[in-house]
Length: 260
Image 1: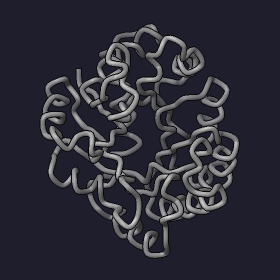
Image 2: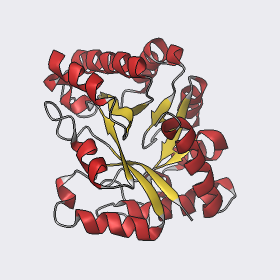
Image 3: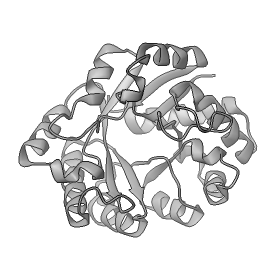
Image 4: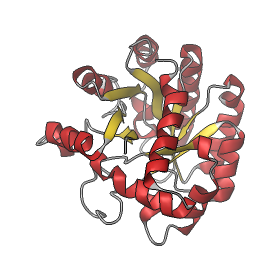
């Protein structure tokens, strides 16, 4: 079984002591590729994912400004993002979006930075990776206005909403990526969204080091644990983990690697 972890934060300090071993364990578990999310600690450093991808054949990268760090973005940030988009291992922009739970950056600034990143990603012809927390309606409205017309698609990462929101995202061309939350016993709405997502729009991720799946819940998450999420997705969808691996790998290839 060959899996692709479409979203992991391998630059996190939580991996400083054993990052190489974490990657080796992922490869041994059947994780063929990992997309290292490049938002890092925010501007001016935009290359957290690129540095890792340069060192590891199995890794790809994204670039972008997380909504937590929106206040750090400058004109130079946007120029550098446009330059980095040409890197051969940069597959997407993100994670970007809105986070109204923590409000680490003022909401108007989050929205402005989100829109500007969509503009740059559209010019670069790259898909986008979306973070949204307690901000679904605003996220959807901005995506509908500023992104859907591009036809480039993207990923709603670590999906934590229900079937209605999944259908809204699907309607504007997005893939839905499920992480450890889908294995949590009380995450019934997320599980229903996983059931109804069409096979050709399904992705899988860890969001490591966060949100480890059952039975690893409470531990530091790592890409090798994606096997547990694949098992749960297979149960929910009435199929096999092997089929989930094939479907999600093909979808990742179609969305992200066909322009690499």
